[in-house]
Amino acid sequence: MSERSLEFQRQASDPPRLDHFLVACLPEYSRSRLQGLIKDGRVWVNGVPARKAGQILESAARVSVHIPPNEPSALKPEPIPLDIIYEDQDVLIINKAAGMVVHPAAGHAQGTLVHAALAHAPEMEGIHGEVRPGVVHRLDKNTSGLILLAKNDAAHRWLQEQFRSRKVSKVYLALVDGRPPTPKGRVEAPIGRSAADRKQMAVVTGAKGRAAISEYFTLESFPAHTFIEVHPITGRTHQIRLHMQFLGCPVVGDTVYGRRTPTIAIQRHFLHAARITLALSPGAAARTFSAPLPSELEAVLNQLRHAAQTGLTR
Image (tube, rainbow, N blue to C red; front, side, top):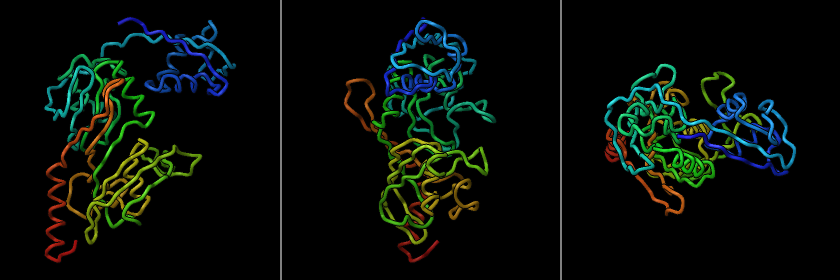
């Protein structure tokens, strides 16, 4: 694969900092990745190599970016079984099991979804970086359900652009402790790093976090729990779990943002990515893909239904 060269021209309304401008122009790349390109001399401004990431651009400045081809990944494919919902030459849609980490990270050097996907589709190697090939969005380790992987660069850019522009519709199913303040509602609460624990996220004041919006709808009510459907409008880290905690009804089994001792005997949190709607390629009609509620979560609901019918409470 050859080097990819792109050129952009800054308008008056665009961000003045070079790295911020590039993030707006190339949303498929992280800011750290773009800053690395600047440091490596692969970004030019008006025909001259950029001096630094924070360089201020004048209006109408021409910015050239030279992106090197993907490097071979050091990750070793692992033949781990996958529940594949859909696959074509561009996209892989998987029903991820709870307990599986999406990509390698500290403490999870093997056995991730990426390792399994590389064994199934070797052509994904190097797409969107060495550590996270093909990854378009993520799910928490103990959240089950639908996740998308891109099998080539063009598909990755297209899918990430849809997520960035909020054209992807996602539906999650969750069981929460207690009851939300209203049967349905909308939560608008910014999310950022927790001041108490930098490894965790938190609902924070507007200036310290990023805008986060979720809508929820009650599906079933029980004496001490509520089964809800959640539509995240944005896609912040741990968004649904934090927004439910913010409402005073944390996700059942969430020992990080909810109750340390789960109110129901469950080995994971009760959160499942059940449906996703998006266009798989430019010009294509939107399609909806679904993943059924895992049996262990369905069993919890059936226990609550049985208890409600027999007059018992939990």
